[in-house]
Length: 287
Image (cartoon, rainbow, N blue to C red; front, side, top):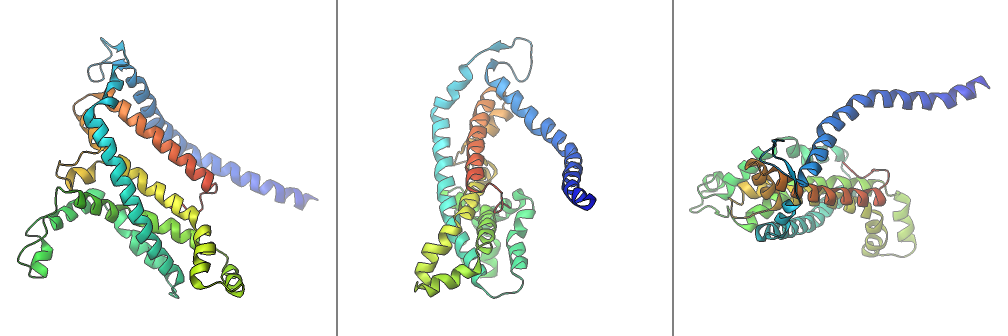
């Protein structure tokens, strides 16, 4: 009887200890994540010069930035690049994940680590390295002894390639994780029922891996939607995304208008997180 009570009490003690250990991180989250959000919501409805409180007045004129032509164009560009990048990452990410899943390699996770290893380095270094490749007289021109190098810097193609290169690993990992969780017996059952390899993939494998596709799409779509470094460096200032307008607003001390745009993006991000929670409640396919 006492042993049974101890077994029941053990999980409770472990969860209590984990909760106690997580408190410093929760405090950190409240201070550096929740507090700035509250400040931005407050700044949306006031009119100030910088962050000075003297002369502050209540106002809703900051929302006019949502109807400005530059903002609408930036939103459209952000949506366009995000959707195209996500679609390309789904195609190549699923192809890579499925080929790795079907392979008989022993160190599959080592290959996954090599795929996501570049994402551990500073994103600005990677983007600037791409920018040097996209410019004329680059290192590839010297290696392959080409007369003329590619000069696509400042174009839509350069921004698109930069986004795909940067965020593709975030699509491969959740898709591969969802594929690995498929019961191998389902493969045999599908073949026993007379399915071809294509029908087995389309009717069994693909639907069961859809959670990984949804999780990966959110993980690619959101940073593409809110990022500003890639279009600023690879777009050479010719392509404006909503992240660039937010950056410019805060650099020019237009904190009120920048807060409006930032909160709008925040609402979109929270909505995307709700989608992930409904499709993958356990978070099993997330990085």
